[in-house]
Amino acid sequence: MTDKRVLVVEDDEIMAEYATRCLINAGYEVVGCAASEAEAIAIGRATAPPFAVVDIQLAPGDGRVVSRTLTQEFGTIVLFVTSLVVDSTMRGHGAGGLLRKPFLSEDIPKGLAALVRIATGEEPGRLPPQLIAPLEPAGETSRNR
Image (cartoon, helix red, strand yellow):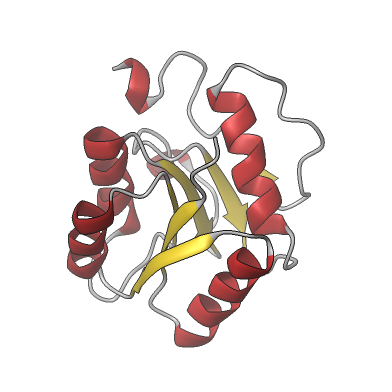
């Protein structure tokens, strides 16, 4: 996949800036940075990004709705980034993986690269320690529904 456009969805301004810098430094083009569910969906619909890095808890909104919308409408590969305890409510929303906060600067690009490999049927390789992927059970991704 050569299109490295990504949408950042994060309501914490410092975390949003950090994620944006991590992605830009890794060669991604950040098409927008949204702090709310509605803003994220609007930017996503305007840009159809192949990737999105999405916090689950948004004020206002829910990153799971953003993930489900982007994966269903555009086939976006979504990486959740959260400090929440990982549980079953994070599955079934289209995200390919989940990166737990705090994380290292290289973990977001490495996580997205692993999700691309998983989506194309390849082995993901060595994952960052904070990354859970695949998040969806085998055969249950939004692309297969």
